[in-house]
Length: 322
Image 1 (cartoon, helix red, strand yellow):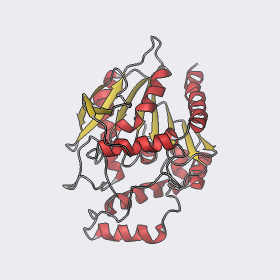
Image 2: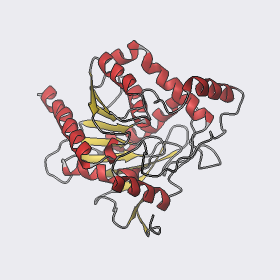
Image 3: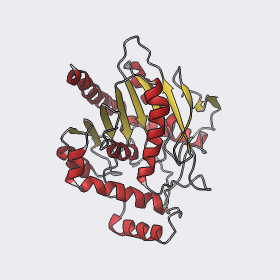
């Protein structure tokens, strides 16, 4: 890659040359009930007519800056837009002294981030109706949120949702191991592995430009990125995903939800996503040919298909309200 580009700060957001913070951003931190600071950003709509607010929720290792292109796509559609960084990553507080470790003890703790953001920012300052656009781990968190009567989202679009993990490891061995490590107080140990990769054969995107752009952003903002997860994180993730196997879970999801999977995704299990979508009373499932895990950072042909599905599904909220 080229030399690291100059970094500029806009509020608590950052940008590099050629990848600017979308205009109009307001950003800061909210305090959770358990004393953590969670970074957020909001953008006002660019049109007079009000379509509502889309909140962008990233996956594990993600941070708001990675979604500037998605934010712009949503602003161009006439939405107000918001985004947050989950606890333990991005510009939000870390949970361990080593900031590189991706850690959480229980996925239910992410609900505290969502609750703080909803109360202090979303419900206070952003126009309804509210829509969620969540990737991977964010999708798993939002699915649990959709069980609650208090969930404020009218519709959710979950992209490559972490319903079950793909076939990259022998999970029948790994998962019991991390459960055991966590039970004896070793949950803070970071699991081995390498996250750096070359473009050929990568499981994330088939778009070389967006692949390199993601690497540039991670290199420019090393303090926003994190490394491999801890045993505790994987143990907590496996417990959260186990809930999705229960048919009663799908039946109890209260928010109309579109599950979008990439046909070439190996990070998450497409069969599990399809099964969940079939079992949901208010859910739909879409498989995008040629797409890998990071659909929002895929090549234009894939993204065009995704946005067509997004527009049709979210437009359905207007039809349902009519």
